[in-house]
Length: 121
Image (cartoon, rainbow, N blue to C red):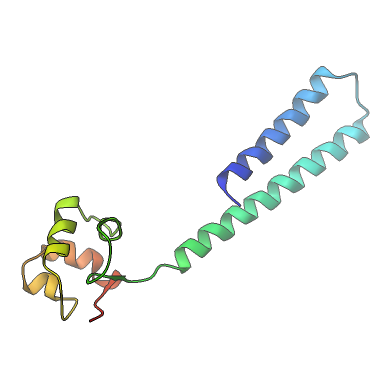
């Protein structure tokens, strides 16, 4: 599920509230039932969003600096387009710390990404 679903659930709650204002007088029981339905849907959508975020965090894989695309390299924390271009131009690397020892990136940049990169030969 996405944030779109969450917004749709919120929109559903709003419609239920507006329907109560614009239609003929509904009984308290009808209002409770519609509110319960909308709340249950919003709750399910919120759970789906949380699960999607957890899945996204848990599925992070190390970026192989020898084969990653420019966009993948740029997705690393603090990586600029210029630094990504230097990483790609300096290929191939024998070790992850080759980015540092060969002066491809600064130590501060390396410290931010060292746990998120790998080298496959």
